[in-house]
Image 1 (tube, rainbow, N blue to C red):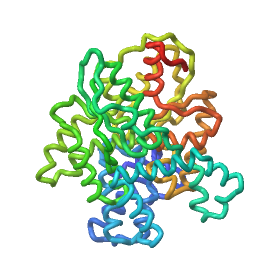
Image 2 (cartoon, rainbow, N blue to C red):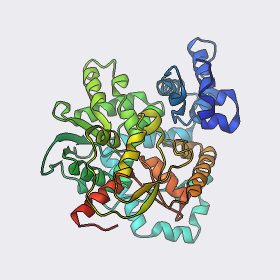
Image 3 (cartoon, rainbow, N blue to C red):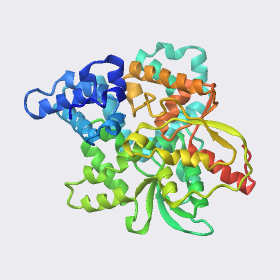
Length: 415
């Protein structure tokens, strides 16, 4: 395809107006490498990692080009060729991809340490004396973006099996990794919403990362290993759905059949897995949301769409339906609601300048609505937008707002 309908939807192309920074330009580069006309070089690596991977181009493409698969394959080729290798980069890739996100208990141990650091107030004390100004610029810029670690992780908030008074469905619950560390309360909210809609919830302990971070960064073998772990965590035949509540993770979780299509032991299981994985908004839209019976509390909310939820999973209307089901809630549409906020996995770490431009654009659009509550449905977007807004508005998620309405129904929580 050469029509260029993807160009005005691509944040990097709209920033530079360079063909190479567009989906069409990147696909042309990939094609040239595949045809042997170009070598895999550092310049190609820089271009592939300048891409956000927001997948807005997939929504715009009239031919349905699967850019996500091309993009991940290109990054895997870059890593195999080693053209982006650098001691500092190699160390951080090893520490995060190979160590932290491959070992869930080690990741939680790091979370406990960070939680202790934050609870003792050491982070704030060191900010007051400007200690972080002594760090290298990259670390100095990243420190304010450090997420607050939750008081309890998901396993401490959610029982292995929770059953509603009347069971209509049986579902598995994915707790994630960053979602588990920073937003375990949203996992609890998700389970409460499922229970309120007649779903028995099965939540395996100490779940692994889904592998999206690895797949998006060229570490295909590790992504495959993590996919196998996830599949083995559930009895797929016994559940009606596997529920995810993180837009970026969900988009990757639905591609296990492609990821494992050559695996003789997991290919069939992966196809069944893909059929069962449902985003929480998608699932409730499918089975029908039970409207809360609680009193209406007037609140005005705007909604930012996670790129991988709307472009990757094509879940667009269901989150809005969830919000509109809440008594007293008025939804005010956000201009450019599906334009990337700049989080994009670890893009705000690897491409901080471009990420900051996208965040500024997003914050301006939010401020233009005059609304002080912003709902989104991905941990990366949640953290990015919260950092951008500061105290100007509260960032939450649709499932949290719905869970609050169900709890008010029971008379045990007031907003």
